[in-house]
Image (cartoon, rainbow, N blue to C red; front, side, top):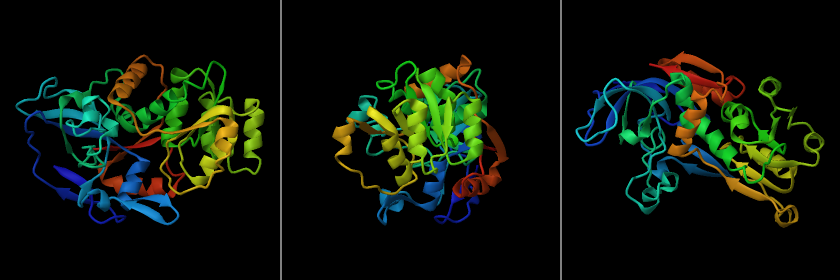
Length: 352
């Protein structure tokens, strides 16, 4: 097998050759045919997450060692199954759910693998899909995707379910006709614009610094778009929503976008934080009781979210996001384009 790997944090990825993996127990080996390039991969490539005020969490401190293979949006063909594996067969085409817990702790037993303290996530803790082969711990994490193109199905495993899960978290606040503000219409935020009509009953308003992304959002049905870098951006939101958004989802996660999101909410509104841009922001504590607002973090999505989203895709209820297919040896260039910002529309899919 061949893998495009991080050999040194922040340095160009390098190809490495290894023996093809042989599955043990319930493991399944998938030959990767499509791997999405996610902005989270950029942070892992750098080797740290920015916590603000000069603080960082390094991946090494979390136990990640090099060399390492990125990639958590994975789809391909089953090529080998362990002696105890059930539910898939060689030749099956599957999308891989990568957000896998240890399988032994109390939260995993409850089916809440995203809360596991010792996860086995593919592409973030264990070697992932920037490779010709990936080892999946159990067949339950492999889902068929009839009616959903392979590259698009791969994106559902992260950008799709991240957007879908965040949208679902606004359902308690967004009723029919209520304004929902989406901040950042890039890879994941763009997916949210596509998925929103099938997930929530509200009217979508999009804020983004990029005029092209705002134009694309209008084509996808956004009732209004706003340049959140404008000095009067909050006033524009208030005018477009009739007094503020019922809920907002921040797919950027910078201090500036979080402040904008808080200020754009109406009384009783909810802000869902998704983006991992990084940084820190002092917020007035008085704002929380005065506005009676809720702030909630949202991280990727569950296996059930992936099943539900694939079903919506099969039914034609979720328009596809733009995909750009590139050869696997361009993985490093794709990461660099994402890091520079504004170079990628939709999602880059690596093909092996």
